[in-house]
Image (cartoon, rainbow, N blue to C red; front, side, top):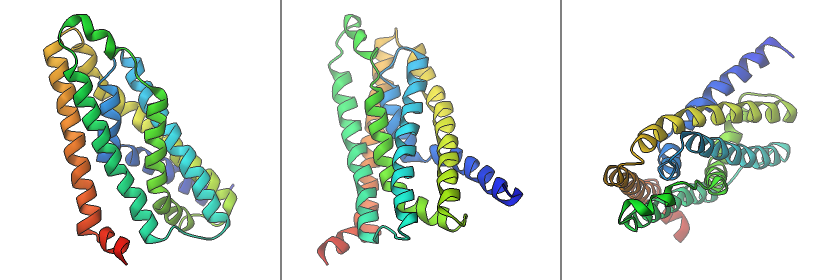
Length: 217
């Protein structure tokens, strides 16, 4: 394997870590991390997000690279729009779920973090970002095999990056788990942030970047 390709893989790994901390990624996973009383479970939520994200990027990316195709702009932006819908859904469900906690006897509802849900969130993010991933990969490598390796290394970086940041995000929720009012307040704040950011995300795509016009044409 040529040194230049090793350098490309190293760059892909670093970009994967950077990719993990994009606002929409962190906000989405934080709504799940907020529901755990154990730091390990919060951390694993990030790992499963990264796994789902990588699977989608790999499957869609390799399919498009082999066929030398690309996702039309309208479809690529529509997939991105799904992320906004998902953020609003996650935000609202987080707010509602914590409003149901009236006293400390109900705190057991925090114990279960859905890894399947985390993986699904990662799947949607990966689907939305697959177009950009293909463009990045095709501009960096020469063959489909190199592209597959690059996407996998990028995915490993993303998984590790999300593992680190969901651990950091989970710390205040874990330490406040026995203080219902504080824990509930922080979780609901996370839900509000997710909802507001999701609405902004959809508005920016639909109005500012012209997705709604593309739908009407």
